[in-house]
Length: 394
Image 1 (cartoon, rainbow, N blue to C red):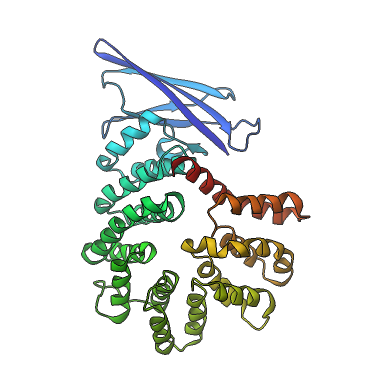
Image 2 (tube, rainbow, N blue to C red; image 1 turned 120 degrees about the horizontal axis):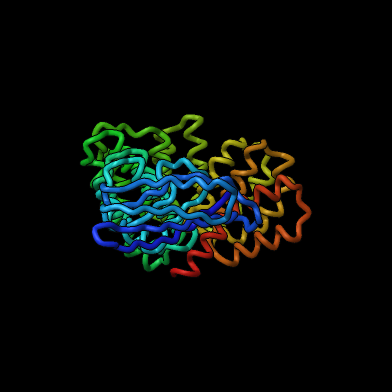
């Protein structure tokens, strides 16, 4: 996949302004490959923007477009207007700052979505401080009415909170996100948005206050207007309380097991219990994963994320090497899609350079089938990014 970088200048010439844009592409994997590249370049001036066509006649690494007009210099340049080109299109530093100022005033949902996506790519490339992205989300999310875009921003914000920022920054920002989610899930005018914000609260809840909201929803003291909790919604909240070591978690888990004695209820109870933040539970579950053939595979797969809860990476790190060593057995004994779930859980649940080293050491030393090696490389990419971002911005 190509990445397209942008450099631009703008000079005023009397009543006109002359903007010169240089686009340079390179392959993200560091190869010498070139990609056929035609794109539309947006010269942003808030809602008053101009679009230029960049369509090189020959395959080149660098090409230019320019414009002279009376509209004034742009405040930002975005090199993939209308998303016609394939690649990664990051905003240059000047444009990134301008977009963070102007994004709330852009009315077109598609344009907002593309610009939010470019900012997120910048976070994942360690070109933008995740703290800055979270601050922007907290500022603009209350006014975002598009459900799909709101879901995307919320999910990325929670990822940044859980993976990319320091514990001190997270402690500062999480209560703000919790308060926003709790308010929006009750007061949003659209039912779909209330559901979106309910799930946001469940995903971000960490403090005593937010855990209290989850417990009140489970008990019926708090309801989301027009929204009926499904069994899995309830079990996911129970799992959150267990993972966060809430003082009432055990009693709530026991009560939910009695409330939902169905077959699915038993599976979800197994999932929720895997989130207990203690070494004995982790050892018991991991032993079952490898040796208890009577345990249904879908139960195991359902529990992997709870076992590797985002706040338990130190507790689950000792199981990473064992999970990697077990890959031949997992490939041999489990269904085809289980392997990716296993890797996503045990590698994706980690956030440290120590874990990163374990995975890459395994890749360099183990005799692996090509398809398995590629799966590991795919999954470890997020861990690599996490370590890089934390190293730069923590």
